[in-house]
Image (tube, rainbow, N blue to C red):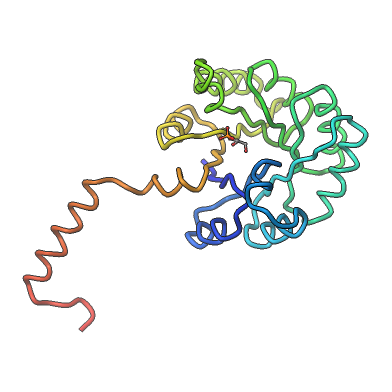
Length: 220
Ligand code: G3P
């Protein structure tokens, strides 16, 4: 499973990229606004920090303009994935951009039918938003299960990677991995939580205390 980070904060991206565990980055207009700074400079810098796919979202709503914006975004770096919304215009733009060899991430997916359409339009990634479905009392992870099943029914035809988005906690990540989703995009706060377990901390404290009592050192 690939791990992307869901942020436009450069310091966070640099921090996690240093672990060697980061496979890509997703941004959206809200995350760009939250991070501040110039959009193009931010995206260009992210593409330098992380060699994997970096999603940058169009803001036009008509297919022709989305395609123009998508071409402009794709010119920033070879690892740009142009993000388009799951509308008819977004799907049209997805088809044109993907046929031109650009990676496309179709975002704001909330149903299996939408995911099927995006795959037929040649999307590189489909982004179902699990947390926002949970927020309205629906089962976000059930949608991931449906999409995994549907795509698996058509091997060699529906080649789109399932990129689980709107992740709120480590349980979302584990459940998505159990279902075989290709990618999870994680907010920095959730990424930080992944490594933590109180028994790890407690166990390490005990090991170090006992080692201290031996009076020995590994390097001298
Ligand atoms: O990047 C899209 C998605 O991950 C947004 O998540 O938390 O705003 O629902 P959220």
